Image (cartoon, rainbow, N blue to C red; front, side, top):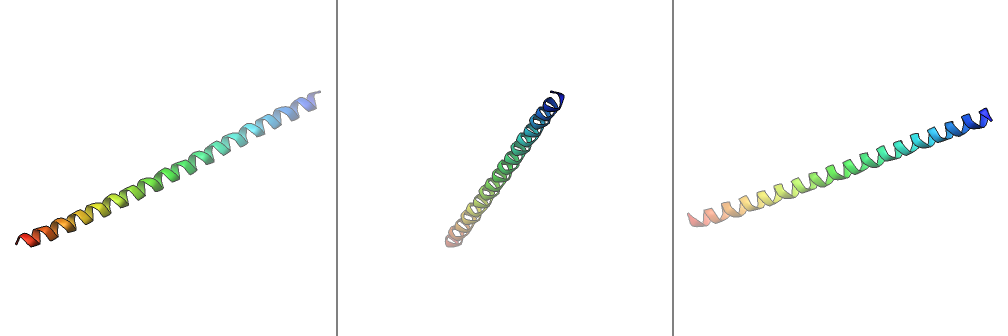
Length: 64
């Protein structure tokens, strides 16, 4: 029975290791997705800022 118990423990340990690895990968993918979304939000905000500045500059030039 010792051999079977050892094999069972090894299989359980392997299963736990695989589970932790999968969780780590899921976390990393989620982090990268969050980072990409944040970068997209920043780029959109920068474009909005640039468009607003251009509009304001144009309006200012009409006032002259």
